[in-house]
Image (cartoon, rainbow, N blue to C red; front, side):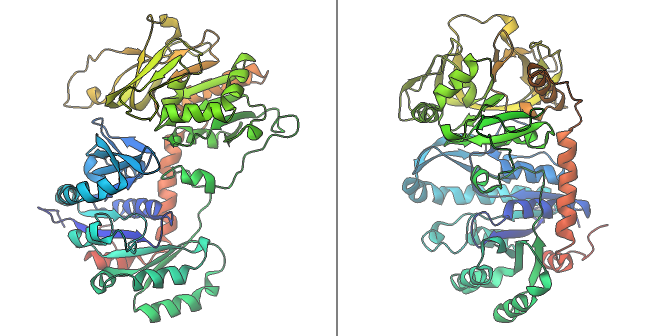
Length: 535
């Protein structure tokens, strides 16, 4: 089949609740259909997440849709997530439309004023994808049975109707009540919505599936719809999570500090990440989870501090608000004490901004507070503007302590601008970067100049950068970790972890796992495509 105007087939995954595994199952289907020879793309009309992804042309979408595009082996575009909501307060969000900030809305204003406009935006985006791809895998949000939200829905059943997509309803058995959640969801849907559901997937199963079979038989008899698969829980999958809620739910495998403040293994690097209330792009830290000599842990209060070898201040959607929280909790004092004692400290994006002398937000771009004193490690000030910088970058490291020049890639997402009282010495600027999109074929500007980026202390133990994904650069990450090791009198280790290669293997592992437990011929039947794919 070739996709003509709007000819691409569609299928949609919706859940009985949030966090049932829709994003990973969508990624799995994207990989499976791609493996089976179909040009495939993901789509989520509206996503709410602080964990974002920058497309090749410098636009911002939900991290999950970027990951799903990677699973398809294609470049992500804003058509895959035309509307992104980034919570900035308890009842307000920054609304990002086709990768660019529109404005802040509170929940009621967004629902009443903007959702009627948003429907046309998401339908147009989907139609463009259906023209370009043979299969589009749609992902819903939360539950389709939220009665108070259904009349303005643009992401669940109404989106499925616009797409003419059969819907797979996903339920998480790990949280209990799986049959009640499925039947209850169906009961709250309108008849035409129930008719659109083509079957169920029970996710995160642990145990002997034969013991579940009587329940599966009952469910099929009760609903008249098939169970399309029971997917066993898949441990140690090296793929990023959708949002920071998963940090609280993930089992803590870190070696916690003992009474002496140490983690109990002197040849292991104890790295503490400050778990900011509005932490964003926390996937920056992911590669450290898989380094053999790293004990990675998240710190939310002073009782968890211990005696870390390195502290990471991550990104934030509300940098001033999170900086004030850092001070109120006493963690700011511990960061200062750590640095004064020769401890290693890194700030990424919002965390980088906190390292300076002062943060100013006179237009209340991020925060209700107009300014705040920074941690004071460097003399720069930060001023928040209405223009958000979103670019993919490539570059080189300058010599930072023992590091020689090495290539790095990543992306920037920030509204803060660094203002220096005087230009810092070039030796203290750790990176030289330029926009990566300038290097793509056909876009020209091959001579795009490099610009100095970031800041580093004279001894190399404290550094900050706007570069998200900096720790995804394997050689750079290992070089930094080996400097930490040297400071403890430990021998260096080789750069054996190749994170992006591991990620590709993880996509294949996920696809093989889901393929082995899914009634894929029934899904291809719903797509009106050959049951064995193109292979």
